[in-house]
Length: 256
Ligand SMILES: [Zn+2]
Ligand SMILES: [Zn+2]
Image (cartoon, rainbow, N blue to C red; front, side, top):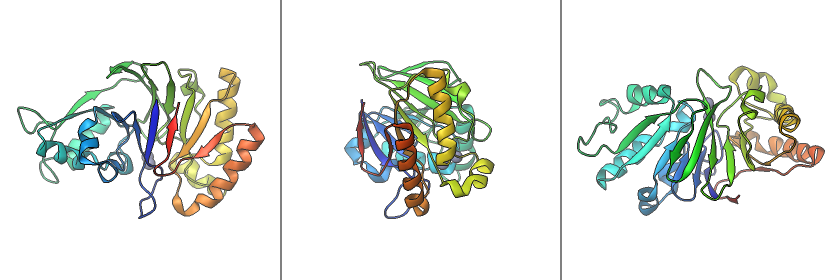
C-alpha cells in the first residue's frame, strides 16, 4: 500500500494544505487538498473518497472534484456518515452555492454517496474499509483500510482523547493520527476535541496495553504555525516510547 500525503495540516497557505491522503492512486481519505494537488488524469483515476466528518477542512474539495468530473462525464463514489452527506447537500451542493452533483447530471451524477455505518465493513475496489467512531463532534469516523495484499492502516481523522474503545476494533501496521497543537495548548485541544503530544502519549499507551504492540505512527493535522513546537515534543515522545513517530508533510509518500 502506498500512501501519498497531499495535505498534512489544519490550515492552508502556500506551504501547507488541509489533510488529504491518497492510497494507491485510487482511494482518498478526506478531501482537503484534492484538486489542487492532482492532475486531471490523477483525478479521473480516483475511485472512492472516504470522508471522516463534516468539518470544512475535510470536505472542502468535494464541490471542486465534482465539477471536474462533470466536465469529463465521469463520477466518483463518496463514503461517509449520513451527517456528512447532509452537510454537503445543505451547505455546498445545494443548487445555490453549487449544483447538487449527487443528482446532476441525471444520467450519471458526478458524485455518488454511500452511507457507512460504524463497525460495518465496506468492500471498496478490493479494499476492506472499517469505519470506527472517534471522539470529535457529533459523529466522526476513523477508517481502517485493509489492502488486497493484507496491509492495514488506520486513519483517525480529527479526534480528541479517549480512543481505547476505538483501539479494540482495529489492528493496523500504520496509524495515521492527528496532533493539532503542542502541549501548551492542552485546554484548547480538550475543548475542541483534538490531541497534543502528551494526549497522544496517553492514547498510544492505551493502544499498547490493549494490543501488545505499537504500529508505525504518522502524525497529521498540525497547526503549521505551531509545528516546530509540536515536532520537538513528538521527537521526545518517540524516543521515550522507542517508537517510530513521524510528522507528515505535503508530498511525502509512505509505504506499508
Ligand atoms: Zn474537525
Ligand atoms: Zn480538521
